[in-house]
Each structure stands twice: as structure tokens, then as C-alpha cells.
Amino acid sequence: MKKLLILSAAASAVLMAGGDIAPVEPAVAAPVVEQSSGWDFSGQAVVYYQTNDAVDLFDQKSSVADFGLQLRAVNKDVFAGIGAGVEVSGLSTLNLENYLVSGVMQTTGKLVNGNDIDDISDGGWISQMYLTYGVANTTFKLGRQELPKALSPFAFSENWNVFKNTFDAALVVNTDIANTTIVGAWVGGANYNGVTKDPTTGNVVNAFNMTDFNSVNDDDGIYMLTVQNKSIEGLTLTGTYYYAAGQDNANDTHILWGDAHYTFGDYCAAAQVGTVMNDDFDNDTVAFGLKAGGKFDIFNASIAYSNVNDGDSGLFNVGGVKTPLYTQMILNQNAIRTDNDTFVARVGAKVLGGNIGLAYDYTTDNSNNDNDYQELDLTYKTKVFNDTTTLFAGYIYSDYDKTGDANTLRFWARYNF
Image (cartoon, rainbow, N blue to C red; front, side, top):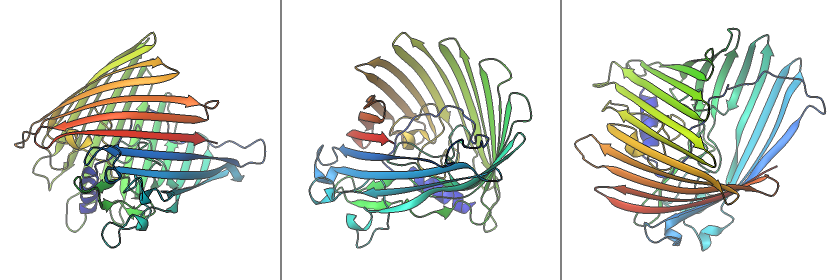
């Protein structure tokens, strides 16, 4: 279990992150026989740029960028009902480090000679490679794959970066019980999202290599069971349990997480609660959250609250940097993962051919550090070229009481084909 805790601690140190709470969806669809050639080919091309005022906005030392290309092929019935999928991903700076940026959003190598961007900027990896099979009301998925947050809140694929992180895992999904989905999983390995930089010099000081898949809990992996029920109209209940065997005479870790989401007309309300437990901890982690929101013509709005105690582990994602909390915003994960109270208000509007969003976070640090945090996110997202391309622009203001404020700009374009 020490391996799991080391990974979660490392993830919490990553500075660049973002993303939204994903909707609750089944992890695996039942395989069906293709009508044409059997293979479905698709992909995406991404241009990603981010800058902050650690030195100056748009200064080379304060800026990072990536160009990404991802290709995938899926066949839901290769032979006798056995399906297969493969996805390859590649990243490059296109030599922008020579005059525009000093780092990358995702890396494809290990740092050599200190902070040489050439060692981490260009390369590729197999991001997904799996087999599927379905029988009656049970489906299986084995291999490298994405895991959604709603299914696996402590080991999920994050969508804030150029490409999602993925997991080496085995999944079983059963729907024999009416209005109920049961998911069992074993997660063995993962790659990791993120780059950390020196805020003064802008140099890369630590990089998680997207091409490097490592075990999440030595040879034992992590076991997970999720049950989701929709028997009551408008109400979705989801419960998840993780078991991670202890390593090197350490005790086992148990994680429980529950979520209830109720929709009535244009309004919704939700609650979440969970705990991370281990006999080696001085304090188990306990967290809960509440959310309410609604749609009003072209507008939508919500408020959310979360509390996390001073437990030893805090909240984490073994494959990245985010938390499953309703109060998760673009950059606030380090402030909200442990020993805090957080309030978030959001409002959005469908205008200017897209969606404008404004979110504000106030986090009270309940530790002895007394380092409260605020964040303001202003975002715009739209689709162009017959909805094949998504454009995103975001401004993030963040402020810790003790270390001061920062301004970040993030832009990306994602073309799907």
C-alpha cells in the first residue's frame, strides 16, 4: 500500500490541472457485430497552450505547449464475439521551445541533464489496447483502457490535459438485476498526467512520463466494486468500494465512496460521502459534499460544498491529480484534497455560439497552516467546422493567502475525425 500512497502524494504536487465532473455512465457497452468492414477508425488532433505570470504572461519561461495526434481503431466483433480496440498517441512541441515556450503539458521521456525540454517533448505511446467479450447480461474488458470518474472515483482518466491517462485493468459489468449495473475491476497499472515547474525560472523540475506505465500497488493491484441503481425515477445511487493489499508489512487500505444524484425537471440535487481507511493511519480520511443546480432558459447555475477532514491520505486519483469532489475546479485540487471547507458557485450561459462559464471557489484551510485559497475560472467553449472541432479559452485567477496570487491562461483546439 506504500506504493499507492506514494503515488497519491506525488499526484498532489502537480501544479497544472483541470477538468469537470463526468456524468454517471456505464463503463462498458455490450459488444455488437459491425455491419460493414468491422473496424471503426477515428482520432483527434490537439493544439494546447498555457501561460501564467510566474515571470510574465506569454513570456517563454512561463509558457508551455503541445501538439498531439491520437489514432484509434475499434472492432466489436473480431472473432466469435471477441472485440478489440487499440489507440496510439503522440506528442510534439513542433520546436516551439526554441522561441515560444519552455515546457510541455505532457511528457514522453525522462528528464536528462536537468531541464532539457528536448528529452521530454517528442514521442508516442500505446494509450489503449484491450479485448472485449459479452455473454448474456455480462460484458468483459481486459487490457489498457480509460476508466470514468463516475465508475472509479479514485482511479479515473482525467480529461483536462492534451490526452487522457489510462489504466491496465480488467473490468466485468453485469446488468442482470433490473435498473442496476454492477461493475467489478482489477486495476494493475497506470500512466500519470502532469508537469511541475519552478515558479521562478520556469524550468521543468518533475515530469510524469506518459509512455511509462507502472503498477499502482506492486503486484497486488487494486480491486474495485461499483454498484449503481436507478430504480427510482430521476434518482441515481452509486456506491464504490476499493481494496488495496498492504505492502512490506503495511496494513491493507479500504476506500468507500457513495454518490446520490436526483434530477427533477430542470433542477438537480446531489450528495456524496466517502472515507479512506487503513490501520496504519493516525486518522482515516472522511469527506462529503453537497450540490444543487438548475437550468433557466439559456442560463445554468449551481452551488456546491465539500468538507475533507485532516486524514492521513486526503483524497487522490492514483492515475492523476484530480479529486472526485463536486467542488473540483481547474486548479484547486491541492487546496481541497485535505483538511478544508470549500464553497463553489457556478453560472453558465449559451451565448456567442458557445458556452461561457464563470466559477468561484473559496476554500478555508482548517490546518495549522491557515492558508486559505480562492479561485476564479472564466471559460468559453464552442464547436466549429460542422462540430468537428472544439475550441476552449480559459482564464484562471488563483490566490493562496501565504504565497500570493497567480494568473493563468489556457487555450486549446481539438479536432475529431
